[in-house]
Every structure is written in structure tokens, then in C-alpha cells.
Length: 448
Image (cartoon, rainbow, N blue to C red; front, top):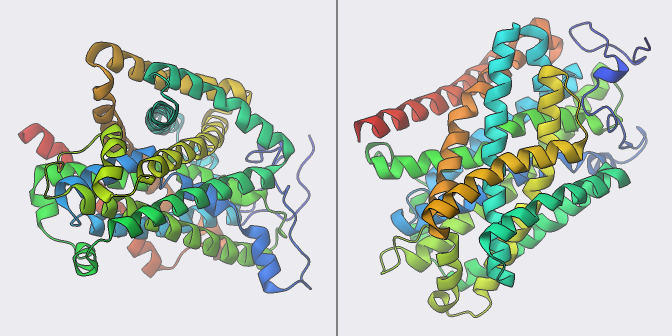
């Protein structure tokens, strides 16, 4: 059996051809030679961070940010900032694992954990992907309804066809996929920049919102939304995704080559996640400025926000921009969800499935709750379903975060690329915050 001929990963193992993460895309993006400028070499690594950032501004984020801004003003901006900082740290660790070991997070789990634990982790991650896909289905269906008057159920079914979009882009090359992602992200950012200007929030109030308060933890309703924001922002499947797609770059598989790749990949994801912070904060700020403290402070549905934004902000195009950005977010999330699903399935259980089949299966499982909720409770129920999906995501986070931190702290696994004790302490604090918030949410739910 043919082995990969480049140098082994830090733990001393070689990577077989069929064992490469996303084997058809592995090392497919060229990197300029050492004589090229630093900027040109950095540009070669730009892309994976933006694919990862998609999960931090998908339709699920919109629901939580909208509800947080309308209900609690600017207070939950501190949660958005905290979750973004955690995202930057965790995604940097994810990139480190992939670049240093040539294994994604799912493969690393399969290599080192017993089969029962791997099955548990796989099922937890699949549940998270379905919850994420549920948000995408709802977001895309609502956007199609708002823009074109398509019934919600029809929009949900149409959204299943996006698998062919993903296939077409992947067939042309990974850079085409990244280019489309970045273009749609720019559309989202531009739409909210215009709305932010129209909302004209009080700068002092916005700044105060970035300072945490104890009320976030003591108020069960606010805590529920805060957990939803963290669940919608720090995506479990993104940790698997990032550890894989950073390997699409054809950097030298040597210690110096890996260090350079890690430096550029970390910069790429940090810049991309800063854009995600802007978008998430803008959604909450617009909702707070438009709805909080007035007759619409209970706005929690995307449809209501669409209907009210133009008259409240006094700008006719505001609602249309909202819907266009929502459709762009749903489309982007589809692409990354497909890749993450493929990585997780192949990594944990070595089960290979055509991308279109994998996409239709996951999308089908996500569509069923939407159909059931719509038939039983009407269109208005999908907003609550969207919010619930983000809490489910948050509950799955420890199953991805704890193995990731354990691996990158392990010198036997990572060699010289293991993180320092100080960095490990910070990473474990992040994991602890996630665990504590989830436990507090469970307590509040049962106590209530």
C-alpha cells in the first residue's frame, strides 16, 4: 500500500494516501516558494479562516442576537465578545492540531480513544451538525419567503438542492469554494454596515454593553439567550472542519514549513473571526437600537424583524438588506456544513459517502423537525425551534473542546508544536467556562 512520502508528523507516524483528511483536496492549493514576499505567502493561506467564520454568523446567530438585542438591549454584547475570544483561541488550536499532525480532530480521536468513546463523540458531533443544519434550513426558508413569497415548507425543501451548488464548486477547486464564501461574507457585512448606520445607536451605551454584568448569569431568561449566543458562535463542528481544511495548503511538511503554515493560518482565522464579531455585534446592536425599550422589545422572530426594520429605522431598503444577508448566510453555512459532515463521518468511523448523498441525508434529517413544527404549531413556531437548535449546539461543545485541548497540550502527540503550559491553562479555562455555563443552563431549566 502506497505511503505518503513527505516527512512524518510530530508523533512519528506516516499518513497513508487514503487516510488523508479530505484526501481529494489535501495539499491542492499551491503556496509560493520561499523567495516570494511574506504578503504573497500569506495570501496563499487566506481562505480556511473565512470558511470557519461562516459558522459564527449563520442564521442561528441571527436568532440569538436578535432576541438578545430586542429583549436586553446592549447587555449581551459582552457575551458576543467573550464567545468570539473563545472562538479565536479554539480555532487557532484546531489549526495547530491539523498542521502539526496531518490529522484532523476526528481522526485524532479515532487514533487515541477507545471505540465506545469515539462512537459517543461521533454521535454528539452528528447531532450538532443536524442542529446547525436545522438553523440553515430555517434561515434559508425564511429568507426565500421574505424575498420571494415562497411558503416556508417549500423553501425548506428547496434548500435541500444546495448540495449541487457545493458539488459544483468543489469540482472546480477549493479556491473557487473559498472565493464564493468570501464574496457572500462581504455581502453580509455590507448589508449590516448600512443598517448599523441607519440605526444610529448611542456609542456610550454600546461600549457599556461590552462590559460583563452578573445579571447575565443570575437572570435565567438572559442566561438562556447567552448560552444560545455561545452555542451559535462557537460551533463544535468548526473545530473538526478547521483542523482538516488547513491541510489543503501545499506547505512543506517540515518543522519550519509547519511553523510558517501555522502562523499564517492563525492570522487568517483571527482576521476572519474579527469580521464575524462585527456582524454578530451589528445584528444585536441594530435589534437593540430598533426594538429594545419600545413596543417591539419582544421581537424574536426573523420575520418580525424583517417586517419592522424598515418602518422603525425609517429606511425602506433595511428589510430587504436583512433578508438578502440572511439568504447569503444560509447559503454559506450549507457549504461548510457539507464539508464538516464529510470530515466527521470519515474521521470517526471511516465511512465514505458521496458529498451529495451526505448532504441530502443531513438536510433531510434537519427538514423533518421544521415540517413537524410547521404542521403542528404553524410558521411562528420555527423561531423557537431555531433558538433551541443553538442551545443544543452549545450542549455539544464540551465533546469537541475537551479532546481538542487535550491533544494540543500533549507533547507526545504534538512534539515541539504542543502548546505551552500557560496557553494550556487558558485553553482549559475556556473549556471550563463552557462547561459551567452549560451546567448553569441545565440547572435553570430544571429549577424553572
